[in-house]
Amino acid sequence: MGLKGLWELVQEHGYRAITSLVVPAIQPPTATSDPPTDQASVEQTIIQPSTTPVVRVDILGSFFISIRSAYTTHTHDIAHKVVEQAIQKAGIQKSAILYLDGEPTAEKLSTHSERAQNRTDAAEHAHQ
Image (cartoon, rainbow, N blue to C red):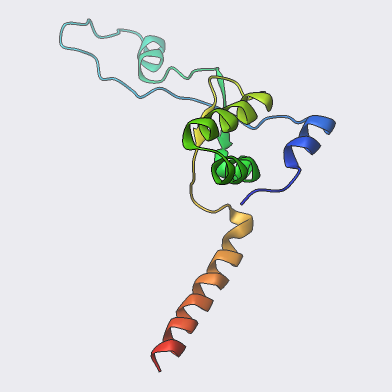
């Protein structure tokens, strides 16, 4: 779900993006490579964290209004461009990881649980 006017508020007041460190997958040494001899080299070989921050953006949550409006009023070709422009206008980095959907946030878990229980109760009531 999106919040109407969220990006206008964020652009007006500014924001500090949530970033995280990306740790590359650990690759085992190849048979042809010489094994490191000292402890520091071993540790450097095992874990080499990247210090490049990555911005993670929930596209549906952040741009729901723009997406709904674009795809209900335009053809798909034009709607794709409209949504892309909305995302670019928000100033999201090209290196950002864009999530289309995911697990509900911790703040919404109780609401999701309540709705699931309501659906179960309604289905049971309908079968009686």
